[in-house]
Image 1: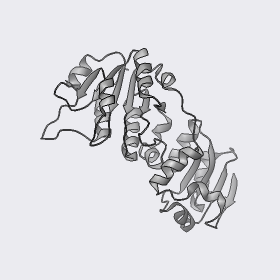
Image 2: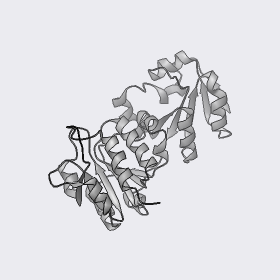
Image 3: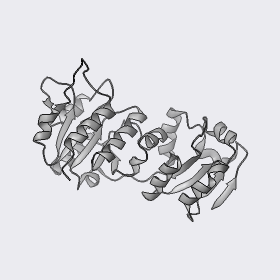
Image 4: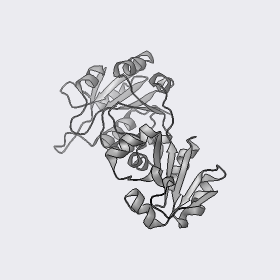
Length: 268
């Protein structure tokens, strides 16, 4: 390993890791600089297994051997820092001992991502990184073939999204929609029925829709509170709802995604 011991908090080798708790700053900076942060050895390993490349790894001395088994002979700089230095640089206590600054991969066009898919999850304007990560975890665990995120959706590669997803953002093919109409057109070209999960008097019960499931389904969900925009709803072929009880009208968006994906998962 290329071990480099760093004790100065102003060392430029630590710049990728500065201010990780400043969500607004990192949301702008990371895509602009072509990087994202992977946290914990498990997540770093999943990112490397998916073919992503590390710029560097930041570890405490007690985690060097664990990280070494993951990094192997890749020649990635491993920055070994005292735990108090890591806390000062990142803005929080790095309890899990390992962070990696990763090169952000180039995203594929929507048409390429959905070409061989049968079940696609579409996320419109989710602002909470935790919900995005949880939705990706549901997509990976419940059989979605791809995920599409809207231009204003929170970054799936933001540190919190990646951590909550347990690294499944590296497992499920995904891309960001540049043009909504073009993305809808690409789905229609591939024969997808776009099913919007929303509250509506005209909505179809999820159980009914699942019983006569189209061959290809793109499941569309919107942000907490506001739900889907009129543009997104107008794009849908079908509006679907999860039947609720106990005076509750809806679920958290990630929970709703999990329920609907489970109901719509193609037979294996």
